[in-house]
Image 1 (cartoon, rainbow, N blue to C red):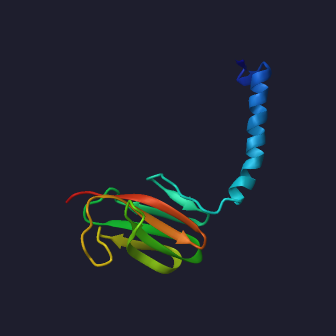
Image 2: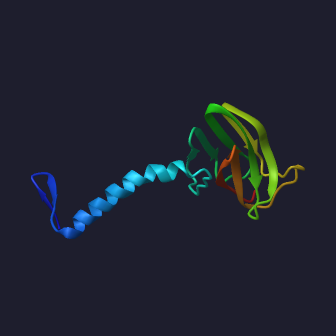
Image 3: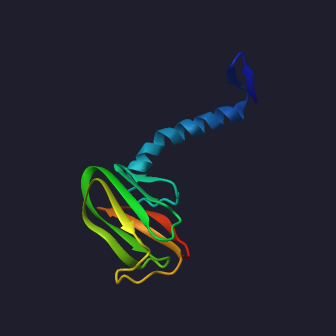
Length: 141
């Protein structure tokens, strides 16, 4: 039971005390689990980050082109590719060093310059043994 008395919350009973204990145990063991996790994939369409890298696309969805912005706080090597929904790389936007803030324009084409079909594509940023991906939506012109 939770009571608010004079702006302070008080818990009564056995179950709330167990819940607090579980939260404390989870909070103390979480950093070790996060530090051991190297491969990261996110599904958010707003913003994603892997340690010292910011990565987003704007506009999304897009008709003509989208600008993919990669910001790194420590120079690192890696690649930025576009994959179709089957995971096949359809275009490589960058392979080399990322330094500072870099913008990459993708016009919805494959490596040969052919216009791709409208649909969902993954923009995958790989650095070392870590990666993050972002779903980009190409819509009909």
